[in-house]
Amino acid sequence: MFRTRLLSGILLVAVALGVLLAGGALLAVVVFGISVIAYQELTAACKVRGEGMEPAAPVIVGLVTTLVYYAVICLALARDIGTVFPAMMMAVVAAFLAFLFVYVFTFPKYHANQIMSAMFSFLYGPVMLSFLFLLREGFDDGIYLVWFVFLASWGSDTCAYCVGVLIGKHKMTPKLSPKKSIEGAVGGILGAALLFALYAHFVINQYTMITLSLPVAAALGAVGALVSMVGDLAASAVKRDHGIKDYGKLIPGHGGIMDRFDSVIVAAPIVFFWVVLSVGMAW
Image (cartoon, rainbow, N blue to C red; front, side, top):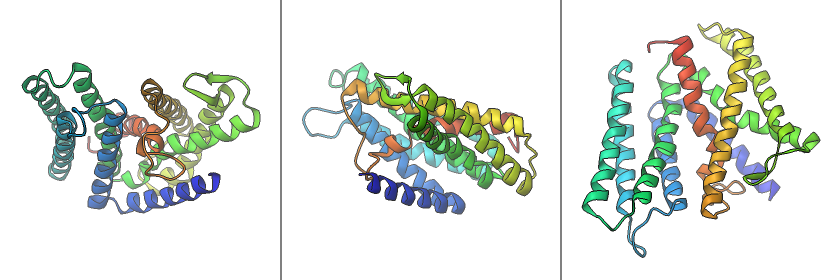
């Protein structure tokens, strides 16, 4: 099991490296594909379905609106970067209205909690993941900035795991994730702060037009790690609420997309908004 998990993890990192370096249309297609799978996993976990084996209208609408959403942000990004935010808001509102139409015109086939779960899945998966694409493609130095997301998520997770295994004694959230410890969480936060500072010093300040102070980089790393842990636990909470072990079996040894990208999903918008507010390139 450990060997399978390790090999699939290495392959996942290699694919992520290649896709993020390539960027452009390839990245858009891959992130869209991941978003579709994440949406399907979430709606399946939340039991958004019709009677029997028939396709659920809310799920179909969510998949269509995901396609429309990515088409809209890609077109807006290609036209004028300043129109991306309004385009995103219009696409999200249109998706919400589409779910309301399904609820009204199929009533009482689907319950309110199913419609709300479908909308929740759309925001949680496709919309949150889209910030990874926007961070990479929306800035001149996006090819360097995007790696902050993975340092905050996968980097902090690795640091937390190592520290937790070595000295972890006090359970952080025993009902959600019994193996996670307070010591591991502190190690993950401090580890991410160190990784951010090192990356800022050796990469950002050397190869981009951005000058990022080490204390600011460390603070961003700590915040990013904390938010990533919350994202990880939130995804676990959804699983516990619905009595499932994993979201899927797509990634051997890891589970589904939501099992592996749970922290990336929440780290991406945090890093993105930090870049917008502090660096502000073109936005």
